Image 1 (cartoon, rainbow, N blue to C red):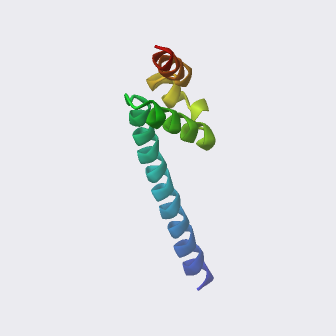
Image 2 (image 1 turned 135 degrees about the vertical axis):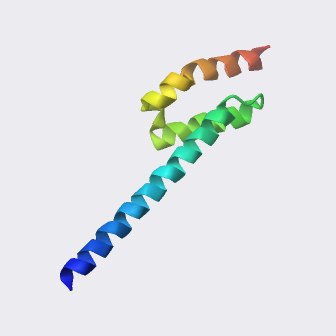
Image 3 (image 1 turned 60 degrees about the horizontal axis):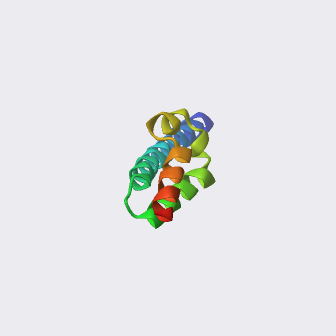
Length: 80
């Protein structure tokens, strides 16, 4: 009986972790798209959310878009 409970518990835990990773991946992709927005406030908000999640250290995020470069583009656009 204990082995059945343990098996069910482990399977449930693995399913939850998979769902969390999928949800995080979808959010990350959405935020990366928002970073390219013409709307400066939306782009900055996306950058801040990425920083809060710690994804700015993520290799995938660095390869796709450099947060610093995007911030600089938006910064210079606001100066003009």
